[in-house]
Length: 254
Image (tube, rainbow, N blue to C red):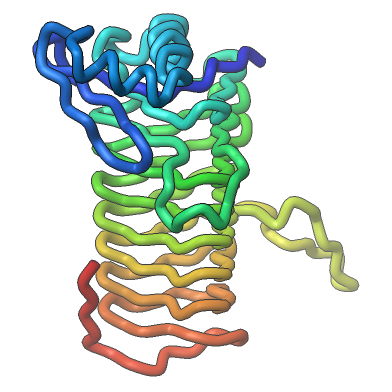
């Protein structure tokens, strides 16, 4: 498997350059290396290295047009692709960042096995320590304006779809597989993989686990520490282990 270099810089066009600096954006108009830019580089010299990494990362993998810098990541975050794996980025993929302060220092990673697809359908943010894995031939898609915060894991063995405008809190695990076969006395066994579907504008609280075969409807809210092992209707609040629906017709705002 070939590892993509980590990056920390993004350029949306040749006319305006932007640098992520201490969790915020610093816009720099042409010419790039003016006095303001020089001061910034003196205060944070690692930016120079990150600019070089980001250029070669996008160039190496030719994500759409490399000069558009489709991937934007903290230094040390990685993307690994196997043979035939495809990373499709409609707009921008962020890896890392200070989404919940300084409580997590590990780096984000995306690991794609052979012939798998990871489709970023807009702007998607993966916080520090987030791990994304797509198994051989699997298909993972994440919608526009969705973010997954620190130390969460998405393991896609078959198909996982996450809608747009979703908020997935830290230390959440989303799986579409049991990983192991279970044999029963009647000579049957468990179905190893089942697709997971998460709708639009879904809020999943911290420390949740979403298991295979689950569908979570649009605008649903999943309370912290919930084991989601069955479907959640739209506009419902689900909590607990075992999970139960405690409210209907709910709405939430970011």
